[in-house]
Image (cartoon, rainbow, N blue to C red; front, side):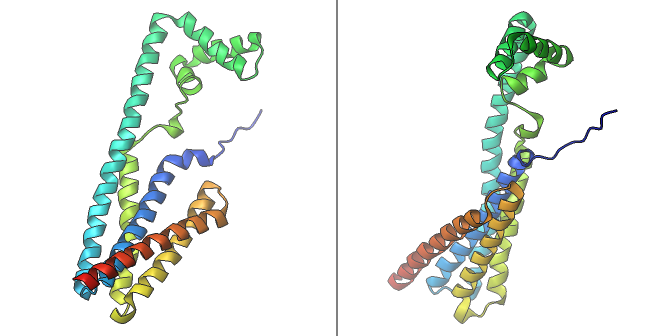
Length: 231
């Protein structure tokens, strides 16, 4: 008797992984940049902390709302396509068999085998067969708006807390370099983690995320310093 096992593929993680990595990266980067900019404008320590907390709350809500709306649009499109495919299966099932057969022929099967595969799959679950092979919609990659929104908001908040903790423990005189250093280290760690989880090259992902993080904080520092000088 042949043994079966379920393989775990990284593509199954793509939905929540993208939202979580984006949220954490955004939380660290936007909050640390906000803190650096406000600190460069010679703001008081309490004001820097308040600005960071406000950025955490606003950013988390913004990420959740944006991700929910975006993924909901994808889900609406999927539902519309599936509804149309369901109706087409009711109206002309023979045409749908031919359509599925042609898909398998284009993928390399000969006509006879492609027809057999199409017939067997449609006998088992015609809608699933067409959703997967015609529309490219699979259970592992289906749009999940609530999951994406929660992952984005939660990961943003976790990422944003880290620069805020640095503000609490770092001395006022060296607050800016402390926040920049800690944030870049955390961003580098996030790059390594996301690369390992998604199977991407670690060095490339780490350099990419730290470069853009350093650039964002550097620009925000300059803007804050100029604003503080003017005021």
